[in-house]
Amino acid sequence: MTWNPFKKTTDEQPAEQDEPAASKESGAKTTEGKGRPTPKRKEAQAKNLRPLVPKDRQASAKAAKQRIRAREDAEYEAMQNGDVRHMPKSEQLPWRVYIRDYVDARYNLGEFFIPVIVVMMVVMMVFSSRSPQAVIVLTILMYAYLFAVIIDIVVMWRKLKKKLVAKFGDRAVARGSRSCMYAWSRSIQIRRWRLPKPTSPKRGNWPD
Image 1 (cartoon, one colour):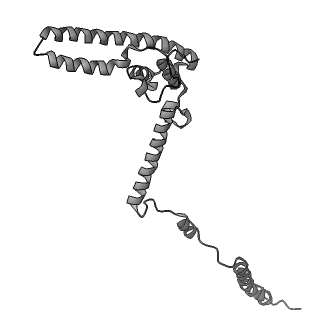
Image 2: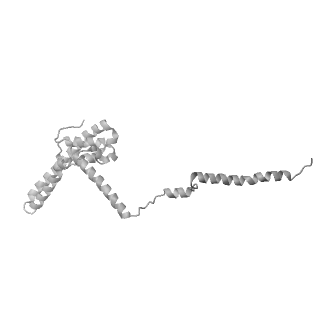
Image 3: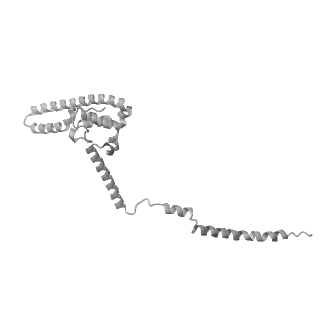
């Protein structure tokens, strides 16, 4: 038997020719099975993209303002009714609730500070040309009342600060909490004008 070097090549040639046909058939079956060709990655990402800027900017801004206005109205109504859950987040802090209840429970000298000062200023303007002595007396009274209000606020805060630290820790009296400013600003407001509204209808009901 003689060896033919071309025999192997001719035998393998049909096998090589059959491979593309098989791949075509498998590709056709894959396409037919899905019903559609597989989308490219860029095409799929492009479908998921959303425009950052809305088409109608005026309508979008108007809708945003309406949402903010509705939220503010709901928060204001909650402060009128004493509903802590729907108040602004800053008013929901437990130590602020305690501060409000403590200030509302005591008699504050500065509660009528603003109307008293306004009345005194008007009276001083009226009597400035008629009776200078009366103006001097009113000025002394006004400063005496202001000094008494400051002393009352300092005494209140010293007692309240100890209670806040004992109940809520140092975070309740830290600088960022603004608890001192919150307490004295509420103490110089007329009781019926305070927001949030006092939870107790009368003084003397101290918080636990």
